[in-house]
Amino acid sequence: MCGRFALTATPEELLELFALLESEDFPARFNIAPTQPIMVVVSGERAQPGSNLPERKAVLVRWGFMPGWVKDPRDFPLLINVRAESAIEKASFRAAMRHRRVLVPASGFYEWRRPPKGSREPSQAYWVRPRKGGIVAFAGLMETWSSADGLEVDTAAILTTAANASIRQIHDRMPVVIKPEDFARWLDCKTQEPREIVDLFGPVAEDYFEAIPVSDKVNKVANAGPDIQEAVTPKVAPDARPESKPAEPANAQMSLF
Image (cartoon, rainbow, N blue to C red; front, side, top):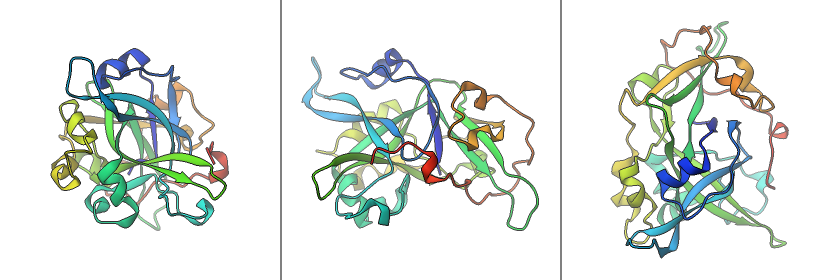
């Protein structure tokens, strides 16, 4: 699961890691929430100068996948995450898996450890980031939704997989991480069919991420400063599998619709 994440990298860092043609001056964001604009990396049509690899560019899309056949987005659930294990087969994602795979740059993500139902223990938020720092790339799917009056909105979701042992103590799902050496394969929708890249869907190594307990400030989308990532003493020990992240009221989030 990935219900919130952060991206605080500089444009220069993004340009270097993803070999981008160019990058917008994307401000540091510490609490990115569903329905907000997020940056994704897509593969272009032309080849990079001096390379056989296609040019890559960063674009802004709405975080919340919307299949093209949806008539009214108000009648469709907000799809911020997609289970990687079933994305190839499900009608909602089949076309995007074949034609519109993207990378979602992040500095890390937030996850909530929830106590069992009926327990009086509070939930505990965690800031999950690469142990060695830097930028992580999540596997994503992109789709353009068109309204009856011609409005077009680019949308995206993050693929998730079964959590590794360390993250499973907090939540049973985690984002699919695409390593730099696999960027080209994941973005290559012309020659790499979905069945040929399923090996990328497994969880990352146990020591890739570190989970830092943080305060409840992250629960509110209005709290968007670096202080939400400050470590606190955990209220609940991460010793049991959680259920899910607290829901955020939709009207508290910025929408592209």
